[in-house]
Structure formats: C-alpha cells, structure tokens
Length: 92
Image (cartoon, rainbow, N blue to C red; front, side):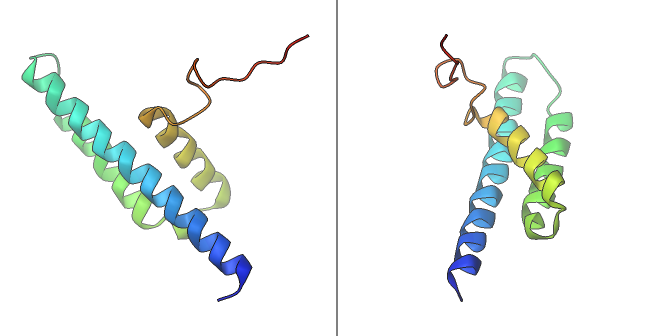
C-alpha cells in the first residue's frame, strides 16, 4: 500500500468513525429524552440506522455526499467549527 492509499484509508476510517459516533450519540440522546418523557425515540433510532448504513458504505459514497454526511455528523457530535468555542473569526 502506497502513501496515498494509506492516507485515503485513514481518512475513510476517520469519516466512518465520525458518522458512527453521531449515530451512537443520537441513540443515546433519544433514550435519555425518552426517559424524561420528552420524545418518541423510534425516529432517532431510524435516523441512527441510516447513519450506520452510510458509515458502512462511506468508501462508496460520492465525495460530495460523503463530505456532507461527515459534516452533519460532526455537527451532531459537536466536533466541528460550528461550536462557538472553536469557531474562528476574522479580525479586522
């Protein structure tokens, strides 16, 4: 395996783990909300299942679709630049 293939493999593994983490967090939060009597968890479980399917096929996804799925997963897990504590702003 050459350097390019190793980098691609590492990037795909990271993307897969990010999407799986989002699915796990979604399930966890749905269970917690259900315990509090706030929501029906089956909708979150369905979405988590879709995320898991996407994670399993991350290497086969169109690059734009993969980027979007990973971006959404990062937002769901709080692992993105959309967090105010991480966001970078341009100073004038």
